[in-house]
Image 1 (cartoon, rainbow, N blue to C red):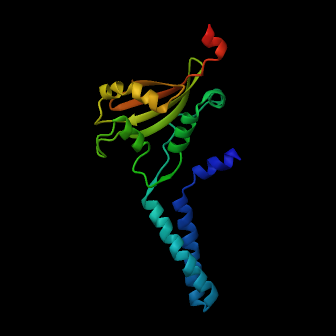
Image 2: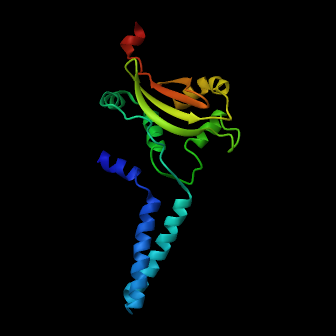
Image 3: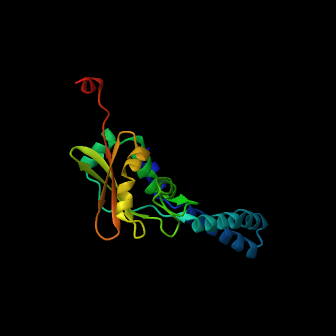
Length: 196
């Protein structure tokens, strides 16, 4: 069931509608020239609106953020054990097609005060999953030429609070205008650990 959901997330709905609408419209034209009124009407009646819907979605489509490195089996096992609901939601949202958004995590960046305006907004360029000292880590790789690294550091606590609970945010400048935001899973302390 999970593999079907992943496959649907990786499929562009606009391309699917363009194909279906195109085929139905072509069938409508062929039926028109063969004097088949029923197929002609059905082809035009369904084909053209579906084709236009596909074009509209294509214009509003935001492609998935690519993984910059393959996720190892060990990290996948850690994800199943430790990933927080927020980490899973963010990973799922940025690695699938989105519609009606200008950029991945644009609302989040605005709430965090890291997107003064659309032209200065950092762009999510990649995502990867890692392990850090036995903890699951989701790394968001931003191209941020207009927002200095010092501003990211000023917002570190706010980033942790936003993506929490049970998440520690680590920031690193990985060369040039690239900032890596590492969301590290922090397991909750059990009552026994908290008492000691």
